[in-house]
Every structure is written in structure tokens, then in C-alpha cells.
Image (cartoon, rainbow, N blue to C red; front, side, top):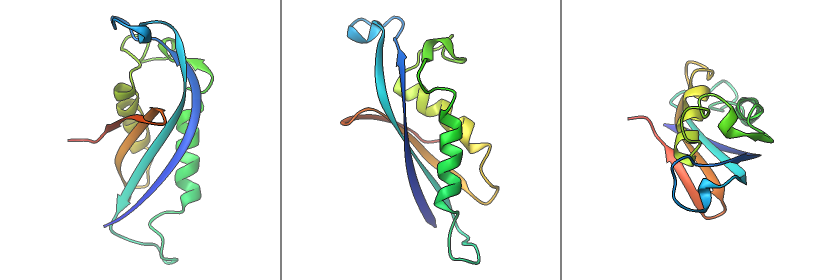
Length: 122
């Protein structure tokens, strides 16, 4: 099994509905998103997939979130834009656009340099 990991960043605001504390108030993060893909077959160059391709897929998946209010973007207009739900949302969005031979292993969402949430499928 081969695995590669890429990261990208975006900035946005959000607030957590029903949360009792500071995060109920409007605030922002410079989010770091980490994705790991895996597969068993290498191409004729000896790569699972070009890092450039995975980086572009991730960047494209984050573009509509950058410099936005997450609470205004579906599905976060109905569910809380928590780090955990953002990780699951991105996992579901990215996993369907990967080449057939590549599987998304996990998505991690860092809301600060020492706090992250990770989504892995069951």
C-alpha cells in the first residue's frame, strides 16, 4: 500500500450554533486541510499519483470556502460548521473526484496549529 499526503489552507469565518462558549460567536480561522490518499499500484513513472494532481483537487475543493462565512454555505446553513463536520464534508466531496485506482484515506482539518479533527470512513 502506498500513501501520499498533501495540505492546503483557506480562511473563513463561522459560528457554532447551540455551543455555550466563545465559539458560539462569529470568529474566523486560517484552516489547514490535510488529505491522504492511498493505492496499491504505481504508474509507469513509479508514482501513486502526481502530487500536483492531488494538490489541484484539494485546492479546487476548498475554493468555494475561502474567505466566506461557512454558516451561509450548504450544508453548513443547516448543520454546524465544526471541524469534525467540515472534515466529513470534504472527505465526501473529494473522494468522488479521485481516479478509480486511488482511495481517500482521511481528511484532517486543523483550526489552529495544535487542534485538529480527522474524518475516516468506517
